[in-house]
View 1 (tube, rainbow, N blue to C red):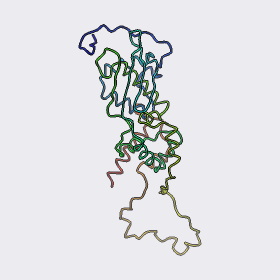
View 2: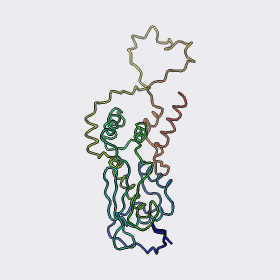
View 3: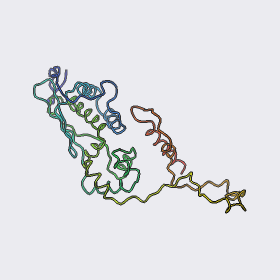
View 4: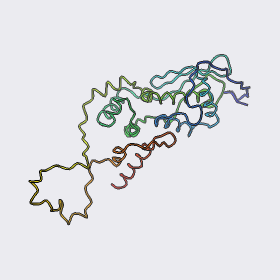
Length: 276
């Protein structure tokens, strides 16, 4: 039997059936399809009690979450349990201050890849590393959850249900991840448009300077580099180690709902660092 906050056992009844609740789409298997949602859910399932999460998934799939609202640093939800009055759930994380978001926006705006992806409405995978490098992680390392139910567990099944609904909301709008940290979509994009255009240009490693044949008739068959230097290791340029992943079409393969190309990108970068 469940135990309430005072340590007493209480009878847990069946939840009241809800008509029109926020049922998650994934009725079987993992909840969350995009990499950012999977990152959040994988973290939840790694630190939270499995039994409570399982009951929370059942609640989320039945549509027991009546509604939820997201604000900087705070998510609130109403979850229908076995009692007539829905339980009130609140999930809190630190929201970053204005000065911190100024630093984040400048860092995002200075990277052509991040800037272009965000302005196109996409969430670049590398954004997690950028936030981490700035000392302001994108995803929380811990959650402060409260619920009006008598259950003592954290998270309880009502809080777990709200977290799964939140994860699927991240699927639909990746900017909610940033909004939870304190910056909504419109403000962030307006701020990015106001940052200077990044001047970084990536050299094409396959580009060859064209010269007319008439200018090379005298040395057409001469080596382009001294034979004595052929064994020297070429200097490292600005070519990213994952260039091949960018050049080729990504395979339609996912690992735990995360695109394979996102998993390989980190491995390619680790190999690049090992060669330095």
